[in-house]
Length: 324
Ligand SMILES: [Zn+2]
Image (cartoon, rainbow, N blue to C red; front, side, top):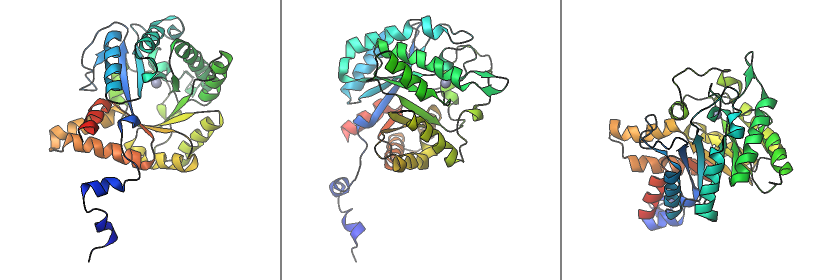
């Protein structure tokens, strides 16, 4: 007997026809690392990705546009950091980056700026803290100042990623006060995970251990969806225009929860450095087809409800989609 589910799987074309959603290049965001010292080499902890010079970043952006990718997430790596991260306010590297990319690429690509203290402080920690306590207001005020500088230089979207309370409120107010009412805030939501480790090694300037409060004090407990949603509710109430759930694969249910609670809110999921390693190294270690696994992960993230996916494999995925 032929039943309904068999009939709609009759051919590849039929399977495509009945898909409610797909993975398209237009869903992808490519994260890039740009170095102020212009040194370009493979990122040891994120094997397969390179540190870019500003010229290299221009080329990467053109490549993304060619492949139909509409956005990049920018991580700037300064030559130096300082103790309180105030270097963010007078170093002009990010300003040069956004001006140049905007000038060369124009409106073809959305430039998203990752805004976090770890890019600027010598301790390379995401939040300010004192005696084991997160200093939310101090952190959020600083993030807001950095966001205004980046937005003025040409960042289309600012993405606070410290997970401190009030980061959206401060950023929205500072942007509005600076006449940047049209710059959206894309707020990050992270569960406390070990999967960020390759990324942290990628943005680290020294081998010194990170000093600061335990990350469990500002990220959400992985098993506690209520805690995660509480933070989403807070940031949405403060005016977050878009959200990023991070990591993706371990938080598929949380992506769905956010989608169900806020159906009109654009949701991104970040396939983080640890997930990237999982995809790329599994092929080496277990004969898994790397391209197929990559597309499976992206499909499952889309199915969970993500409109956008940040992936270090964005170029490879867009290329595969083009050939499909
Ligand atoms: Zn950070």
